[in-house]
Length: 424
Image 1 (cartoon, rainbow, N blue to C red):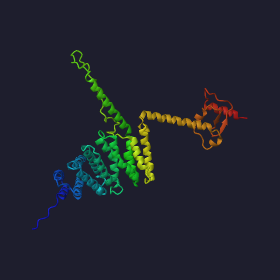
Image 2 (cartoon, helix red, strand yellow):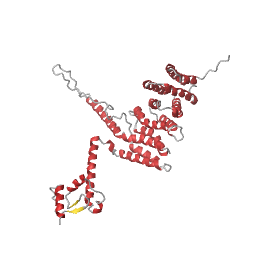
Image 3 (cartoon, helix red, strand yellow):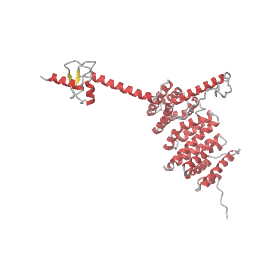
Image 4 (cartoon, rainbow, N blue to C red):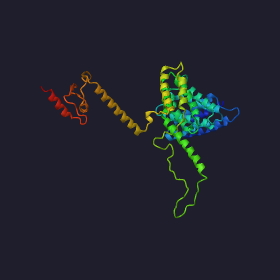
């Protein structure tokens, strides 16, 4: 009997990853991690593109078969952390490339009941890929390679990414970058992460991609600007307090507390401060940006001759907002609620006064005969201190006596006076 040919290890693992039994799938995931570590440590080791595509197909159906939200979250975290098992940056990027290619290929076959867990998997994989950059010290070359990979596989017009993958990626990118690098990345480095989106937004013929980039990246930065500046000021205040504390440490005298007083002289006051990010209005970690440099970069790509007119028009609106932020002007939405309510009331009052002044200046019958004034407006008109009034029918009538400025007459008095004047 001729022995059956043995299948390659990648196909065997993929078959077990897509097995019906959860125990079989869990064991296959653990073996896959050990296999990746062992193979990438070899001098002539490493995976080919086709081999990783087979591995990812098994991982995709491993996630497909997993039920219960908590188990799905645990499995998604385990799968996304496989990137750290690769020993070289090139192998990590190949692993990410085949993941996004797998999602693009299988996306149309995902039903709505399984959509949320694959959204979660995409978010976790993106988060771990940014953490891999963080472990490498945010090297500029590594950042450029990762951004080129993501742009080519997801946002480029020639990519095979469905609209759902593009939209979700643009929705989560800035949020995941803030979670991983808000405490370390500088404004210049953050601009490096945003540059590919500027180029795509200026060139893409897809209006949906343009809208998602504008809304998910640029306008999100504008909306988070007050919180970013607040975080920066808090950081500067904390640094000043630390410097002041170090300079005063030598001057403080700590005494032993006596049993009678129970107090400690020279001790610093006990401050119970709420940790940042725990308030109701907290938006989590926020990235710092140089808004003037970002506006200049957007203008450079939007003002090119080949930029479509709709793209240029949309980007110019964003540029104006960024220029306002660079000058210290914030949108009205960022005004505190109490002050914003007061501004609205003042604006309504100004508009009412403007309408009244306009009505006073228009004393000809032609402008009043088109519509009959309402009862509330008629009461208001009856109190106007001028020599002409409006009849309920809409006509203008000259009063026989001037109205006293200090005490306006009532509506009944005015009507009786006008009736007496009208009698022969």
